[in-house]
Image (tube, rainbow, N blue to C red):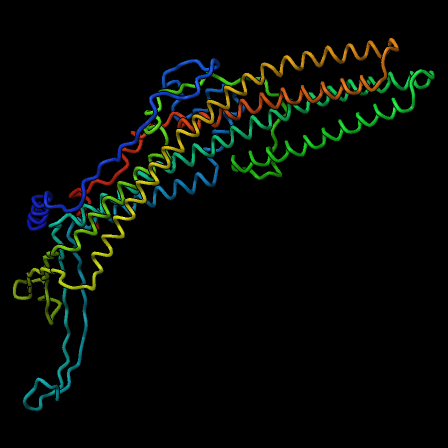
Length: 485
């Protein structure tokens, strides 16, 4: 294997001859601080996110169980893992271009030659002859200008981008599951509120009915209270339908059939936790989708280098040899050996502008990837600001809405007392009941929106992921790989 070591050594000596642009990440102007700074947020270091399990920040064991089911059984996540395995294999394919290829083609044949064969000057007897051969062929394209190395760089960048994309798929799916879970829990709370309102309205209906039988209340009062009760019961059925949709969505995300999956009924009792923000510039390293866009730039930059190598010569070394004999017994012997050695230098001269057009196309593809990267960073900053401003507004709205619920309770008590005392009509009681129900439902909905917005803020912050997680995801060409069949 001395010749193989010599060829590999020559390739390494020529490693500094690669053509093409050196990759540098384009500068991104990150804002110095977040615009929305609400009093609801407590400052915390970045590592406050549980590594790999950001949802644990909500301290909900049932949510944790569903998230673990998602990681094990979600089919979209499984497909993303398969894409990563495919990218690893393709990177190994690209690294194979740095090594020589060696092949063997043993064969045996028995042939009968005509007595009047063309090479005979006089008629001869027909000849029957066996031929045994074990030929070997070696081909090696010396990577003079870095075509194979640039191709491997592009493949490794694509591999790292696919690894980041896997993390982004996981982040999107786990965030969707958490948002669906909290939405379902909010509907459980809202259902409980409406049930309590039905109970209050049923008690009111009994009161009005007794007064109607006693000739104190009119039939209109009774009909209005019955109408309100019926419409509130209708809302219960609509809430059940909405809850079923979220339950079915959670089933699919966790890899279960919707018809065999159920989530126990429980009201939403938790409040949004403090979320560690860090500074805006950290976001560029914490978002897997931004990392995917950045790795796409690195891939396109390497492909520009590959396109440039097409303007330079390609030098290929070829060697062949082996054993050939008409007798199997003398096949492996010194007289039966044959060999040849040669080189080929290919320099493009005219190809109708194909190489220049290819180079221009790769440069345009790189410029496109730069624009996509910058757009992804702007979107990342926007999504964080959306989450911050949303949580700030929702927290203030929730405070005022809680006061509105307390006011609605007092208004209902006053309306009942005034009606029983004969100071007002039952319409005031019906109105107070409707206002109370509306305000209690809105208060519950605001809590649900706060939880969902918290989930999406964590998602916008990258869920505790860091770009360093994909740095080791690359293929390194080694001599051991070169000797693999």
